[in-house]
Amino acid sequence: SQQGEEDPQALSIQEGENATMNCSYKTSINNLQWYRQNSGRGLVHLILIRSNEREKHSGRLRVTLDTSKKSSSLLITASRAADTASYFCATGNAGGTSYGKLTFGQGTILTVHP
Amino acid sequence: DTGVSQNPRHKITKRGQNVTFRCDPISEHNRLYWYRQTLGQGPEFLTYFQNEAQLEKSRLLSDRFSAERPKGSFSTLEIQRTEQGDSAMYLCASSLTSGYNEQFFGPGTRLTVL
Image 1 (cartoon, rainbow over the protein chains, first blue to last red):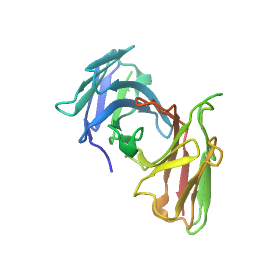
Image 2: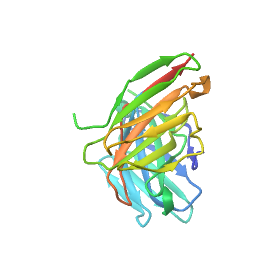
Image 3: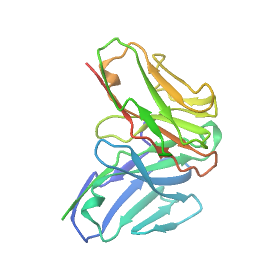
């Protein structure tokens, strides 16, 4: 079953604008990761944030994590047409035999118009 | 190319037939994961290996599904007596063993059961 929900399910913006996607989850986590998937392709890892971190940056990406609200957000600044893809958050469990397994959300479909 | 590879990329089969997929992980990665993804959904965990040991299997993995990683390197996923509901993208990922493990995904095998 899916860990949580992503919001919005779809997002359409113009090139140059910022895109914000949100992810909520239900159980305690060890880490949260964001992945990108182009249509019909495999997933590409974007960024990992640990449960004891609140914010992380990588290039045009900024991820925040609020463990008290069990939520995360991914911000893509100055978007490009090449950013068009589905974006998934995935949570890593906090121990036990499921250590290392990822549980994915349903994803946000981002469309960036040139 | 040192990424995760999967074969075949596409498989069309008739209901009731058996199919086998192969995954070659990144060579130094000792963890290997299988996920299944249906259209419009995020990947769902099926099973994972640490070296040759299968450490966890999802309840999604019925007894028609079996996975092996005999020498701790490549892995195979076999589906016996395929059903139309098995149609999906089957994704393989690998990672190092750590509590904060970035998983690297292969391109997937798309299965269509007629």
